[in-house]
Length: 102
Image (cartoon, rainbow, N blue to C red; front, side):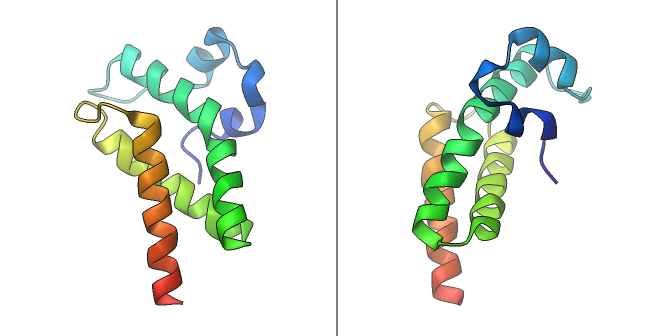
């Protein structure tokens, strides 16, 4: 399950109004945080999944790792200074872990 399913498929043409209308209401999370996270997610999810697919050769594993990386980012949003770099490092490490397990 994707955090914001309509945004992952929308591509770079997503507007701020699209982001705001697609966001679920999250108790205790500011509208700014939701908007900023959704903007990063809509911009980077497809790119990250593509990068991970090139590493793994498996689009399902790639999407799962990308989703987990964004989930971990959201949990640490206030502490992460470079969110884009964070999701790429976490996702790459998740793929490495998958290789070691497999």
